[in-house]
Length: 259
Image 1: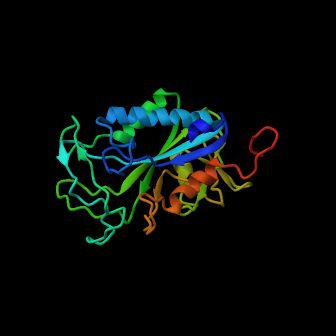
Image 2: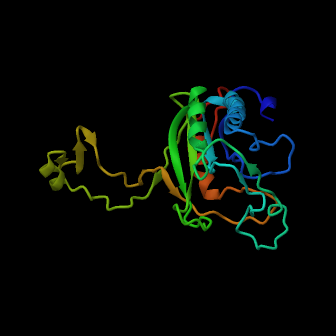
Image 3: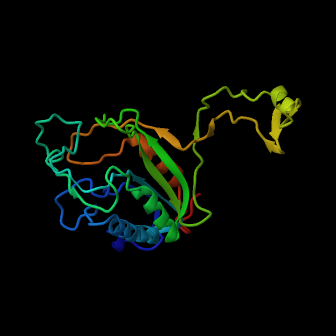
């Protein structure tokens, strides 16, 4: 489908590709069942070469990705989902886990997200943020020799140094006056202008924005159940921020730029 699109056609892209060696979707030529993670990353980045082509120069690309563990393991008898009843026979629960085989030691993370982001940068993408999607209702784990993983990565890429981005704000998590003027004066780090009510830090205006602070990189968003025939549904809260940040509300019909 990407090959049918013209160059510089899209404002932003967001996706979560099939993770390597995690699920067999019973589709010929599917992404994610490559024999090696090197082949998987190569094929995946070839796809994002096309994404880069169809993106506008000021466009952005957001990629959600999780990691898997290495070793030679036959996990085909393990359930794909722990959210459905054990006797569930829906198309999702009938999926099989692939028989994993790789040269990474048993129990060792394969570091697919890190390898992917490095290869994307090697191909000319600019990695602007690594966002942590924290899942407060993550799937329980029975392992006893490591911590339960309750997050995934969301990579924020751009094509060039200057791109379209609408700043996103969030509410302060601490009192706005936490850094009092007198306290900073005592540290020699700040001056306070009683006339304007503003404080500065090394010639920077440090007055809190009453609308909120610049959004941080750890997003706590619960996963949501979905009963229809789709295997990996975004919680809406995960993609709302990238869409708001990367998709202009209005575009000039003549030049295609955000207005």
